[in-house]
Image (cartoon, rainbow, N blue to C red; front, side, top):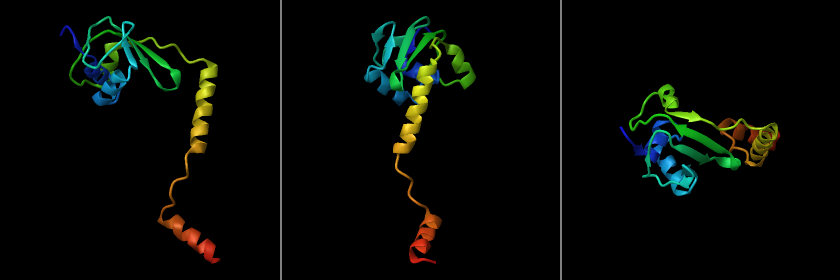
Length: 127
């Protein structure tokens, strides 16, 4: 195998959960190959450099080591690329932690289930 579609490889290498997620990221310009934004149908070869923009401004840097177009085990999939993403700094870790706390506080509480509704009714009636 000389080359494989970018979206297929991203799915097989377990970089994205599904091929459709990989296609969407490519179409939105979040994936670049060798410094140029790439479309999902771009042919990928061994030795190519990938930069994937992740949420919160993070960038994932990958070097393609092998090619596959059919699903393989997750352990074998990790052998298809070398992850050269730098480790996050302490400031980035703290920002992510604060972001998680903020999102957890901002999300509305879940609807009460049947037992919780019954308990609330009892409390309102004064039982």
